[in-house]
Image (cartoon, rainbow, N blue to C red; front, side, top):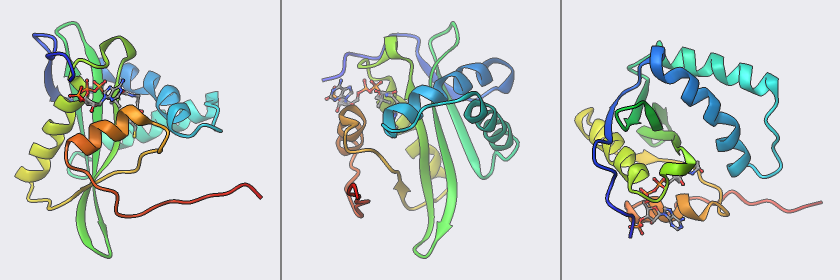
Length: 157
Ligand SMILES: CC(C)(COP(=O)(O)OP(=O)(O)OC[C@H]1O[C@@H](n2cnc3c(N)ncnc32)[C@H](O)[C@@H]1OP(=O)(O)O)[C@@H](O)C(=O)NCCC(=O)NCCS
């Protein structure tokens, strides 16, 4: 069981002026954890900075929420509204909790806030990609009701 969320941690909308740095600084960790052969470079960081700024300018398509402990952001979630052959869905593109705050319920708090947002927006499904080796994330998603509906498979050649 996750410990109780530290009192005072709230989920609020992303504010570029105070949260941009934390979200950008998390990108290397997030991608390297989830794509084991990937190495974050300065070019990658610059590209992510552009993506984050663009997302913040499109609040109807990209919804960013931040977990704030009163002293600043300790985690965030990024949900994009997308359409595919099966219709509209909310894509949980990124969820991240700063290492010292993990295992205290912050990730689950962010996920629930994202689900509430999708529910209010009448978006019928939430979907995400996760690397099998990322056990914490897989456990979090399964605990919140996510089920595997497609596999991405690879082999070395
Ligand atoms: C994945 C992540 C967001 C989880 O956030 P968190 O705040 O640590 O998660 P919580 O404390 O809310 O835990 C919720 C559930 O996640 C699972 N979980 C969290 N930490 C875990 C761990 N170390 N081992 C196993 N399961 C874990 C559990 O199911 C847990 O519920 P439980 O404790 O009641 O069993 C966080 O570990 C993280 O930021 N990781 C790096 C970024 C990342 O990989 N993001 C996902 C990209 S797909």
